[in-house]
Amino acid sequence: MIDLKQYEVWFVTGSQHLYGPKTLETVAEHSREIASALGASAHVPVKVVFKPVLTTPEAIRELCLEANSAKNCVGLITWMHTFSPAKMWIAGLSHLMKPFLHLHTQYNREIPWSSIDMDFMNLNQGDEDVQSDIGTWVRAAGAWADAQGARVARFGDNMRDVAVTEGDKVEAQIRLGYDVYGYGVGDLVKAVNDASDADIKKMTQAYLDEYDVIPVLQPNGEKHASLVEGARIEVGMRNFLSAGNFKAFTTTFEDLHGLAQLPGLAVQRLMRDGYGFGAEGDWKTSALVRAMKVMSEGLKGGVSFMEDYTYHFSASGDKVLGAHMLEICESIASNKPRIEILPLSIGGKADPVRLIFDANTGPAIGASIMDMGQRFRIVANVVDVVPTDEPLPNLPVARALWLPRPNLKVAAAAWIYAGGAHHTSFSYSVTAEHLRDFAEIAGVEFLLIDENTRVDEFKEKLRWNDLYYHLNRGL
Picture 1 (cartoon, one colour):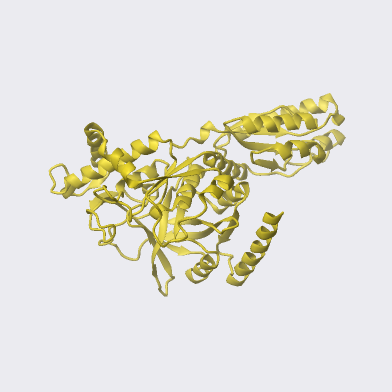
Picture 2 (cartoon, one colour):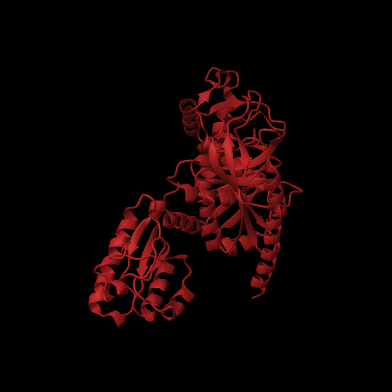
């Protein structure tokens, strides 16, 4: 469902006629070579398109306007190979609506001490950058492009009496580009009831083929009908989301009228395939999960909806057990998931089927997005996922156990001061650098909690940020 290869970035080089035709020919040759190398780099997941060297304000403006209307162009990489006066770029960049990365580098890596002359000086004026940094920015730009015009489906409303899962949907469309649509659960129920027997049978067989399925759910098992009902829900949800060209969706256990069970397995598998998801009507987290899915495409690790569920206070280090009722994406699983059907003491429906697994271990990040009234804010915490101290045979959910950086006491305090929500998008492949680039492109505030965080300094940053965004909005 996610294909970053459909996108392209334009490699745009700035110079001027001052240098003469011979130098400009060399500039174009170098630029074409670098664009080709970036396009072939494993770090850069999109097509890199070389554009002719720009030497006049008119040419720059025309290219920026062209980029705005190019559907697959997610942004520009601008390289000032030789001196290109900033004044020449004012008109073009004033009209540019796509993000751009200023690549501050030079063609040659080292100074040729014995042969350096003015020709070399004219052709080499910059510092070296790295392909991985470009790749990080390109992924963020791809996620931004994916969000423009994206459709988010809300099945039912948000969880009642919970403010943080709500927000200004119109402002989100203006600021972030995606559109949120609300549907009654009856609309989803109709799609579920319309699911064909052939599609349901095919989906049920996929469950049996792909996962470890406990005996009671096998074709002759006493609860096989529950597995079939889970398949019916998934077929219906997939049909609804596909027909509406949606990229993300939400559900809530408070709005299940007409559904036999809370969608669990269906949500987990849809997330695996690239859909964003937010529980309890949390459309902002749903869109963030989708954005991080796009950023992580082709990288190892996975992305999932997540929530801090409970804490483990111990002399060996305070830990967080992350989970949710049902909806954790199998892309972060460390082992082959198993399908089970167990009671769920919430929702008031039949016992739902779900995937159960332990998450991978290693560094990860959890990010939350909030509507602060005057702006949107992303807050993220870098964590280290560790094995559980003991097996969890009676916990009927997928889960991850982690040590927050710098520690739980500081991380939790900073998270609360920042107004962090209880839902996050959790990933082993998306980094703070991806999120920082995405937030900058989107014009969204970004706060990071990591090994360097100190509560007093973090609170001071919040105060300064409030002043900055207040003044910035006024301007």
